[in-house]
Amino acid sequence: AQSVTQLDSHVSVSEGTPVLLRCNYSSSYSPSLFWYVQHPNKGLQLLLKYTSAATLVKGINGFEAEFKKSETSFHLTKPSAHMSDAAEYFCVVTLQTGANNLFFGTGTRLTVIP
Amino acid sequence: NAGVTQTPKFRILKIGQSMTLQCTQDMNHNYMYWYRQDPGMGLKLIYYSVGAGITDKGEVPNGYNVSRSTTEDFPLRLELAAPSQTSVYFCASTLRPETNYGYTFGSGTRLTVV
Image 1 (cartoon, rainbow over the protein chains, first blue to last red):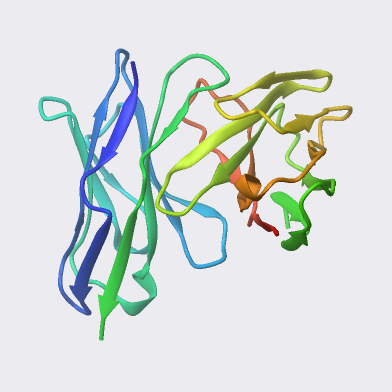
Image 2: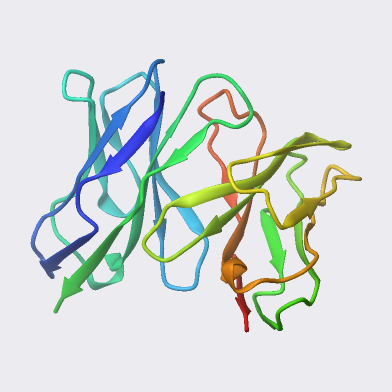
């Protein structure tokens, strides 16, 4: 079975401090993993994706994530938070086969304090 | 701009009314999806389609219907609106789900049933 657990429903950081959004997954297959960001009243935008190549994945806006198979984790980080990073973040796992293969975490709301 | 277009962006329905949420993509993607997003939850799949003329149920199909007469369009129909259908609805598409291609999401339709 496949599932995604986002360990924090809400994370609050000060502007200029590091961001850590945690994601653990469970998959019977070799997964592909994504992070999506959703700004208020907007659709979901792809931040980055793990494609079974490099375990450290760099995305847009200075975000990166590291795939750790031994820990079944795919945590999202950013060295320095910006006000514009305030949004909802979704960790998503997808199977390698099948049309119905996206599994979403419940989301982490990031608040950035000025 | 290429992408997934959803209309309307906002709608208020009375209980028992019907409406169609429109979704169009111009990327020639075969695979299209309808999700709903409830507060504090991840996205849940309502229906999906693997190509024109082919649709299938997702996790929460009750109260909804879909059709796929063309590659570009994938409308979602609510026949008898109920308060439980108050949600934000997202349409998504992808070229091939079994690769790491990623999904493109529309900006959403915020529906309130009163």
